[in-house]
Length: 181
Image (cartoon, rainbow, N blue to C red; front, side, top):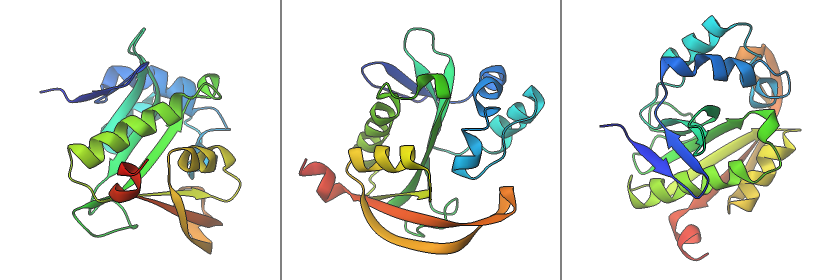
């Protein structure tokens, strides 16, 4: 059964190996990965490897416009065992990125709202964590817009894929806060 989440303009669907070309098109942009803690993709083979080995989580989705169903970004609920933000079954971490041509159109906020609803209503989550590195204003704004509240900031945190250290900000959205909106 192919699982997907639909919003007004978007389909969040499972990844296919055929998405590698589109992932490379957007993930090779130097404004995308480094802000999220990973290096720009160097070739389509690397993007295919990422689809097969990184974007393969139980709740990992390609963000696609309904008009063409092509991957333009990624969104994932990282469940217990795949996140260092929680070790509870009823909590998860949200991660996301979007291709630069699609910035500033409300697409990421729409995708985040769709996956939040799914997490609380269908997955039985009570809390969703989300983080961003200092300077990633876009991620911060999406999280705030979608109801996440700042919990803590830690300096000098490892960013292993970039071999550097950064300040991390963690935000939280509880089911209770989400329901009261």
